[in-house]
Amino acid sequence: MHVARHQVLLPTDPIKAWSALLLLLVLGGLAIAGPWGVLTWYENTAVLQMREKEIALLKEDLAALDNRVKLLDPRHADPDLAGELVRRDLGVLHADEVVITLSED
Image 1 (cartoon, rainbow, N blue to C red):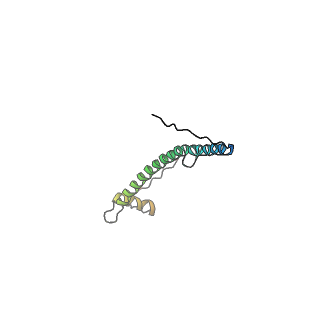
Image 2: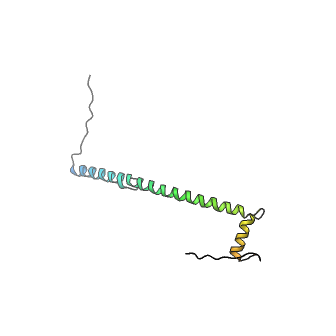
Image 3: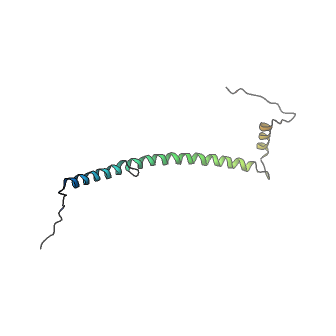
């Protein structure tokens, strides 16, 4: 029984050999440092983790703002928060209230 062997044919022309080597080096360089290479993958992973942390913080802020909006709903506003905002923003005080200012050191 005869087993066929596969032979790798190398280019005999030096220009073809150097061109093939150059092509392999360029493809290898792109696989490591190209726009879809290994180094870019690690950078994108780090950026993704940073963005996920930012999203988590923004979701917390959104929840706090959503709660505040619910407390200020005109149909059933929280009287304490409404009174605080009126006093702070409009400077309205009751006759029996005393204002104590604190220094912001």
